[in-house]
Length: 149
View 1 (tube, rainbow, N blue to C red):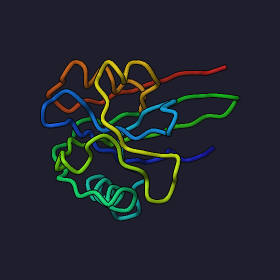
View 2 (view 1 turned 30 degrees about the vertical axis):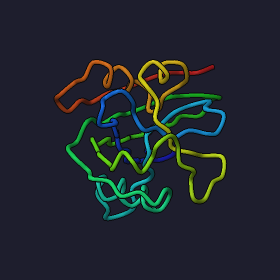
View 3 (view 1 turned 135 degrees about the vertical axis):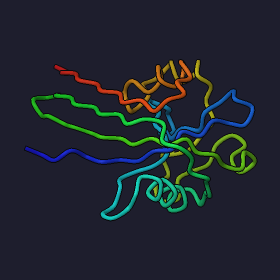
């Protein structure tokens, strides 16, 4: 059986509160928060900071822990367990006026999207949209268990 995958991602809300910075492909077929895999001996906050610099040349202030999201799914007969640690983060809003391209992958970008726009496509990790929409102020533990056929 495979091991759980451990990720760290940053939730960055624009200063006016009207948009959230998300990563997506150029077609915007999905959204997720910027971040990536946590390396050995690295904290989630350190991973978010490193990934933003490596992928987008972006400096961020890493804030408080927002939530832990566990996604335990089965699809095509294969099981997957992802653990994503999400922190509240902030950036200089002027750095990303509309979108910014990934340094290593031409088909990936960061862009500002409203909550309404985020409802139009899958947002990963699953369950996070409700957490953000409800403006939960305490740390949450979101568990998603699904079987896809």
